[in-house]
Amino acid sequence: MVLLHLKRGDESQFLFNTTVDAPLETAIQQITAIYNGRLKVDRICSEIPELADHGITLPPNMQGLTGEQIVDLNLRDEWEDQCVPSGGPVLRKDEIGRRNGQAPNDKMKEVLMRTVEEAKALISKKQVPANVCLTMEMVKEALDQLRGAVMIVYPMGLPPHDPIRMELEDREDLSGTQASLQVITEGECQLWWAGKEMQRGKKLQDYIGKNEKTKLVIKIQKKGQGAPAREPLLTDEQQKNMMMHYHRRQEQLKKLQDADDDSYMDSDWSDRQALKRQFQGLTNIKWGPR
Image 1 (tube, helix red, strand yellow):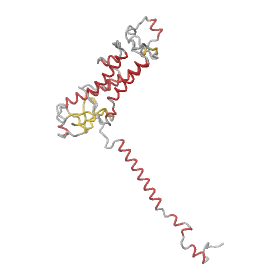
Image 2 (cartoon, one colour; image 1 turned 60 degrees about the vertical axis):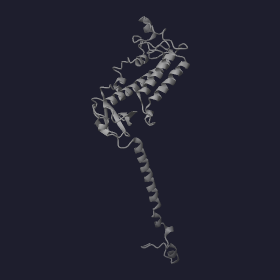
Image 3 (cartoon, helix red, strand yellow; image 1 turned 90 degrees about the vertical axis):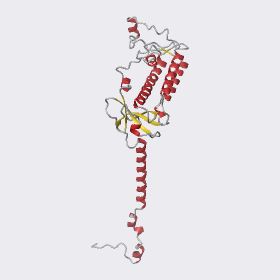
Image 4 (cartoon, one colour; image 1 turned 45 degrees about the horizontal axis):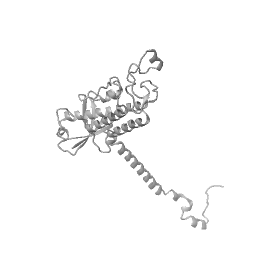
């Protein structure tokens, strides 16, 4: 199996296993699904702590309003009585007015937060140095874990406008958000290796030959963004090791230079003829008028 180390820019994303005779269209489809799946898991994991702290999301027409404004406008959250957390709610007001403040109790909050950590670990970038390949099954498992935790805490479900429910039902609207810039659709996806774009319609073996025991660093890029920066000749760790080696070598040369210093030969105590001149009365002789 060929091991692909996927990066976006200089940042590692995940490892992916494939074969040399796999069509690049298939590889791009699988890589894009995994890449965007990881982003979805990250977005849900960023929303769940807010759910655990402040409860469900208010309807869009009530978000950002103060209590007085909601009363004046005669607005009511019809989902507040339906979407009640298991064990009863705990009042934790949301200062920015995005959620209703009816938070789960501490036990249910712990269920949510523990599941978030488990899901993050499953699709973490730390899997790259651990040499663990990421698959779409692992991404789906992380999503299922998050879905299960939400169902445990909210048996009646979340409101249809809640971003967590929208993500789990693939109804999310990312237009105008920073998250939308990170998403790469299958049609926009380009794979780059050794400064060259890997063209659709070809196979991996057209670029690397038929050696299945190959590891490649592949850059994933959006169409139209140009060629990504090439990989440096040395990694940060290698550069650090080289600098440490150079510094140690400099210290060793300095110590050797100090050991070879013969400036002491100019000192009086090192003069082997001093005693002879003293007996002959030739010490402290000055030439010139006194």
